[in-house]
Image 1: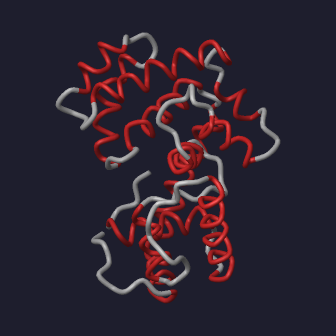
Image 2: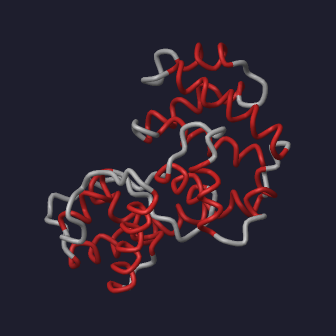
Length: 220
């Protein structure tokens, strides 16, 4: 399905939600199945995917994960960077993100990621840990939200350029510039939550609707 050329309005959002609802529901079910599986390797793979998509495209993230999947558990930083060369825009930096984050997570929680994430009583604290712990490389608030959504946690907004541009066109925010502080991120996220409630579209579905209206695809 092509991206829409229509202006972003409440009516066009509702129309696109109706057109894509089955596809969006299927995608969200796929995300939830990862959390339900309790599979730490799959959860780690999704975290790595989000390391790769920060500042880049989802498609580059897919290609990069394919290139390093065999290295995710024991590959060295040098091996990871070599595998990413010609695949990712920043092979050395992203290879380092994977190696250093894996080293930390092994020492911090034995890579028992499902247990660690489930141990938070508060959804905000869960994301704060990912976004603010400097030993986890490459996850700010947007990519931490992206990761949590991709493994089945609901209620997080992924405020990428496409979603921000939609909110700006709807005159819900005064600038499409990415939020650069925690408080600003939470403020815009709350704006999106209130808008979703007003138009009666689930937040997780709304995020994918807006993204697909700009890109023509429902990915992750």
